[in-house]
Length: 327
Image (cartoon, rainbow, N blue to C red; front, side, top):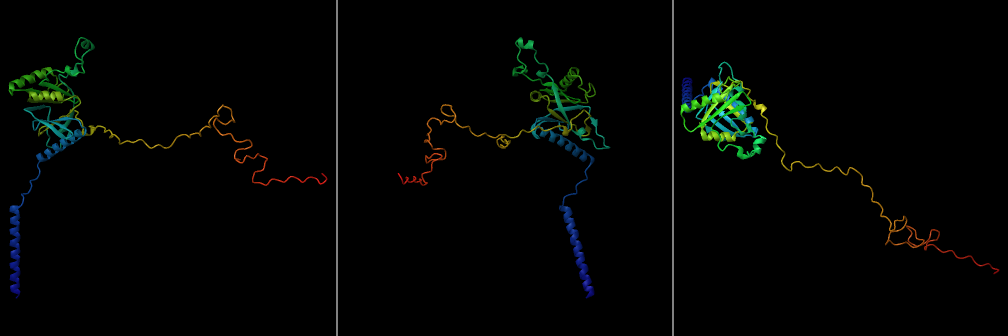
């Protein structure tokens, strides 16, 4: 019996081992493959995404439109409160002044995404206001709409409060010869086009359709924010980019009807008693005209008509003394 039991137990163990191996093979076949370990490029992409989202979160809270120049995707995006309003594909983006990413350490967030503020745009009519003599000569007022040019420029420059400069070049054709001529003409006309000259740390040349370039010129205003996103493998230089914490949200006004006046705490003074009405002829002690005159001998509070020394009618009248007997 012992040998039989030992054989039986051994068979059961073999069956269990075979079943476990089959289940393991089945799970290995139908299970998901193990995820590969994250590489340095994956970590760098996550850092860039986090830096861009932090900047866009602060810009969205400002409740003002802003631009995002993504050099990696060759895209210019118009956003408001974190929502994309318009995506503009770019033909090319050239950034000068970028720094190669150092593989030794993690880059700082401002080097992965930088917020700048537009200071002025080229050909803006507000840069050359009209003088009083121009207005007297018949020129239009500087505050009216007809002072703007009938057609916005397709090629113009943008200056920022930081050490950055951008150039928007719009054209109908895609010939490289025309681009080079425009770039050369602009570098001569607009100092500081190349990073490192004129105190400019970052220079950008954006090429897109001419119609879209004119639309951008009409829509952007001084004080608007622009977010620079460098391509992979490069970092932004130190151009004085704004920190997301420095972008403050606007002050919210209370809704109408929310603030109520505090309840009255009572009359702050004591109201005096009413004055007695004056007499009819202006003499004190006399009753006014139309008032009932009490009967003679009737005093206040005495309605019986008896005088002050007379007994009241309810009391008994004393009998007269009897006459003398000798009369």
